[in-house]
Each structure stands twice: as structure tokens, then as C-alpha cells.
Image 1 (spheres, one colour):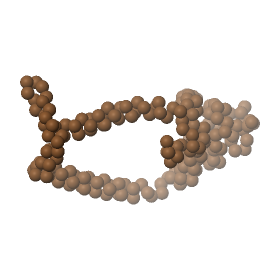
Image 2 (cartoon, one colour; image 1 turned 90 degrees about the horizontal axis):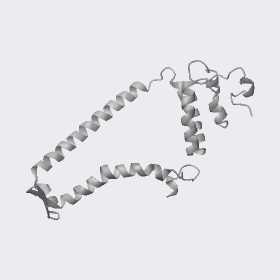
Image 3 (spheres, rainbow, N blue to C red; image 1 turned 45 degrees about the horizontal axis):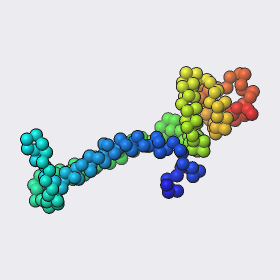
Image 4 (cartoon, helix red, strand yellow; image 1 turned 90 degrees about the vertical axis):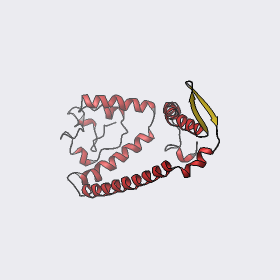
Length: 197
């Protein structure tokens, strides 16, 4: 495997190949096998006689006949017009929608200056700690946090998580889904909201 496709840190997750294999198998069944079958059929003349398919090799005869086929020319024209019109309309609509939502709206500045950078720190932390065990812990903790939003279990399980920005700590308990430290654990947390050692 080339260095350009290695994950950060240069290590390859040993679960990458076994977990990717079923996807590749389905892709082969749904895309590669039918395409190969069409290529084989394109160099044969296939006729049905007596309930059986009779295959006769014709080489590139079908390809040589394409330029003179009226249906092929009409099909190419229709496809070209559809592609140009569809892409043009999509680009125009996308541009108009981007202009409409590009205005600074309520809360957008907060997301750009607080949430996005913190999300980046969390992603870097995850890449540095990526493993099957970490993924399983995150799945279990998701259930815990959904059932018990004020739970501190996330910070006990992952004490080296990036520090929450002060803007998020100041909003704790205000419906943001970020737990406020309980009275008995607040003494164990430092001034940045991180669990004490």
C-alpha cells in the first residue's frame, strides 16, 4: 500500500481489509460482473432458438456499425442535451442556494469560531486513538449519553479528550447537550472543565 493512502501516523488498521472485503464483493457482483458480461456480449451475436441462446462470435462488427446507426446518434444527442441542461440547472440552483445561505445567520459565527475548531481537535484525537476498541467504546458511550445526558462517563473513559472551549463550558446545561459537572465531581475538574487526575 502506498504511503499516500495510509492513515495519519502511517499505520494500517488491521480491520481495514476484512471490513472492506464485503463491500468490494458486492461492488464486483453489482458493477464489475455485469460490465464484463456486457463486454463479452458486445462481441457476439446472440439469438434465441428453441428456448436456448445461440452465441456467435462477430468480433468488432457491432462496434463498426455504431456510427451508421440512427438510434445511436439520437441517443448520443439526447444524452448530451440532458447532461448540459441538467448540469447547468444544478449549477445555477446550487449557486443561488449558496448565495442565499451565505449570509451570516444567527449562530453561524459561533459554529465557525467554536464548534468547527473543536470538531477538528476531536477528529485529530480520534485519528490518533483509532482502533476497534475505541469505536466500541464510542458506540457504548453514545447510548449512555443519549439515555443520561448529564453523565460524566465520556470523560472518565477518555480522560485525554481535547479540552472543551470556554464558550462551550459557559453554555453547559443550557440545552446544548453538554453535561454540567455535578456538585460532587466539580472539585475533581480543573478550571478548563477537564476531569482532575
